[in-house]
Image (cartoon, rainbow over all chains, first blue to last red; front, side, top):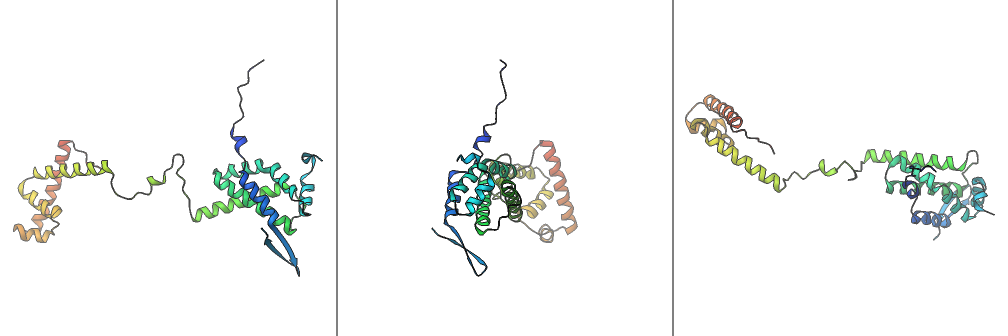
Length: 47
Length: 194
């Protein structure tokens, strides 16, 4: 069988956000609370 | 149910209804494409990380506030947000440029403290010595005018009073002194640079 000399650039796997960033976003999402009062939306971060 | 089989639209509506793990699936599903998309524009890991984070903060806020409309698809919408944030980043950078010392451009080649390094100091002292030696080779009249003007910082009026010649004669001697210095530089093949 013919040899393959094509390689995927290793960079494609490393182009990912850091775990800390993902965790921050998930925690931010959990902490963010939007409450509606008389047609106005208020954001609060509950940690 | 396998998370891979759930569509983006379903995950988004589940998330809006308060299902937090849906967001985790959405982020993990699209993180690589989005991250690569941002990186292809900014070519900086830290900036990419920031833009990626800001993109999802915007996504989360929009979804939680109930401002998301289902007209388009989720990923193109997120990409559009990221694209706008990348533009914002470049606009901000245009106002306050940031320089990185990576690759072929070095900021310190532009910004310098003006002081000479050890080699520069040595070269400079050599030049000063060479010039001084050549001045000694000039005819006495030209030499005295040049020394008074350049080393003693005297005006031509003062020189004329000091040597008893007219200002024009002093000017002429200075001119010939410089012409002769240039000739001496050529004769001795001296390079005067720093």
